[in-house]
Length: 98
Image (cartoon, rainbow, N blue to C red; front, side, top):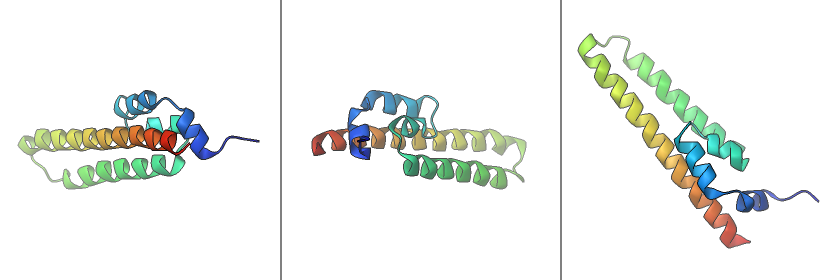
């Protein structure tokens, strides 16, 4: 009998999922945890952030370009931090439930 989704999540190392969501970012820890829905939501949010930055930065002058790049980087770091914290909490919840 194959393991359930909760068993796979509880057996995963929480620190690995957290690190994978921070270092390469963009939901790589979700792939490790086999949480596809969370991965695709994170990918969609990151893509939307990139597209919004590209569209809003089209008419920016050179002085505003550096500020736009910094804002884009901060947004991706916030996304990575939120997904890392959520991945760690998901492992904790799964282990308490078993």
